[in-house]
Length: 86
Image (cartoon, rainbow, N blue to C red; front, side, top):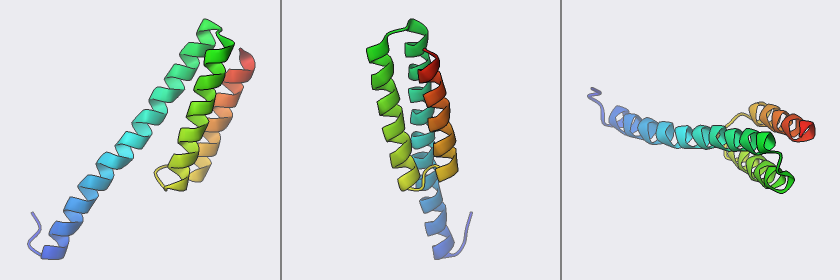
């Protein structure tokens, strides 16, 4: 355990940031899974809605620094390929 007050604060901040980053990454994975499921079902309207939702989430995550911008771009490209196949 840290003995210095600033170190204690950094431990608290890091824990909070870690949980927030996990939320953004986990939700992005969930939205990608839902997109794949919609593509497997073949429902065009659901697929378009899931794709829009995922792209919006990735853009927000990249803008806030929760995902690197290249990671967000790569995942958006993957989503576009999934949508184009269906």
